[in-house]
Image (cartoon, rainbow, N blue to C red; front, side, top):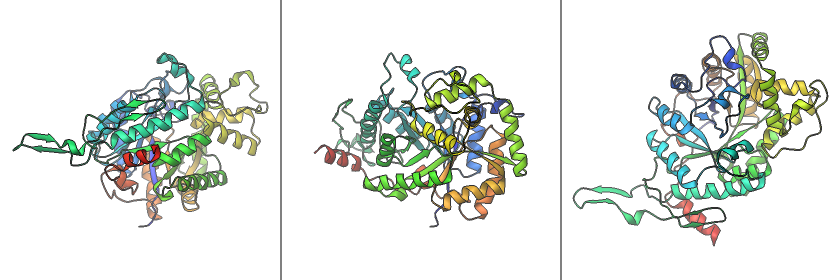
Length: 441
């Protein structure tokens, strides 16, 4: 088969642009299921691999509207599963403020409910404000990743406790479960003690897909060892190509096939009738930005209160924060490369929260995405429409046909499960637990 580009959509009901909800005709709620169902229907119409819902555990008042007011993502996606048939359903759940048994159970349940379309975005939670909602001190970066490594191992082990044929439901004998085909996990580790098994049979995919987005060395190692799909923060083609090659090499060092790990940079495409028209749309969106929200978001990305520095002055010499290394590294590198002022960086962050903004006609955008895909900077993209529904409709109706004409994007789904979309085989029963036992010994 020819290599095909993968597409996910990053769902924020008020749009990915900080002020996208203010654009004429844009949706302005992330608590209205009609909005989310419409986004999901458009994603399936465009044959997207994945519908992705991020999450946070603090209200973040004064930041992006969808960061402040939103629904819990697993509840949301269970409802979306009822109105969709093919698109994958990915959600964030924290390894710092959750429990492995609960995470394993809810994503296994979503996989059953959706007939094999669940994906877990395993994040360590960067925001220290989250700790106050759980009565805990927020762990530092290194400890968060140490917890995450064991957490993901336990979740995958729990998913592997049941064989596919463990539920026999034999009416003649009255036996419902073949106990010989169900294993206990008996995990005893530094952070977790989990007996298992889950109180539910093996899910359709065997193991829901794991998503990762870590940008630090620890985060990259965790992704290379455990992830099926890796979201990345990019601003420059050459940097993205080097990072792509570096991650694939890490995957290889962990004994995995690099072709089975897909790298999807986040990109906000602003599609216009012409390149000039697209820039006009961006200018309009930028004119809506509230300075307080923009500064709060930039401060969060850089881990420093930016309001104490002059916006038209140079960017201060800042260390990588204890929050998100990936965003800070990509943004500061672009600022240095393009000799940006702090105001320039503020505008960049206000537009796409630190992600890459790509403006142009459908042909211009397709040209750029094709270059990144063909020349080894991406396996696909996590599309971040500035507002819904219009900007997402523009991408699906104008850019997707261009990609299809070039033979690099599907014209139909080849299967109904998320593993089908990414060309991943269903893991054999017991494989994860065997690997865990080998590591322990």
